[in-house]
Length: 168
Image (cartoon, rainbow, N blue to C red; front, side, top):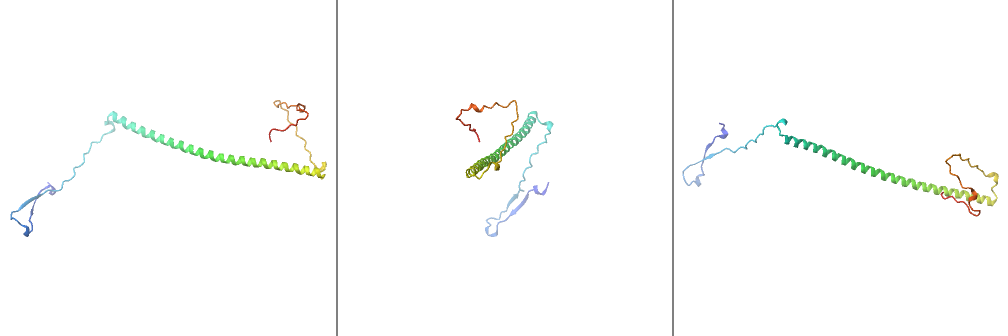
């Protein structure tokens, strides 16, 4: 037996002033209790497990994989949605900018044509413009195609009516 597990006799004496009796008291000191070792369960091999436990473990693994794939799919769909919205917003802003530029160019073109027409009228009124100074352009012939719509004859309009184009 080891020395830690043996009991020992200990003799205690109170100080001389507090002695009431001469009798000796004997006390026995016990060693401090040690914690019990944890129970060790026997290792269970995969083949030794019951069928219901094997199915439960397999179900857990499948659910972990399915959850991971579902989460990854949800994050990918969210990222795609956010990216598409961001790109759509940027494209819309760019389109509006291009439409503004188109409107400005159309307005500037109309103003320029009006300015040229007014300058030509002023020159003709002043007599400074001679027909030899004017460049006359001939219209290019239209290609004949069988699918071209037939145009209305000029005399279809009344004598006092003028033809105005519908668009600029």
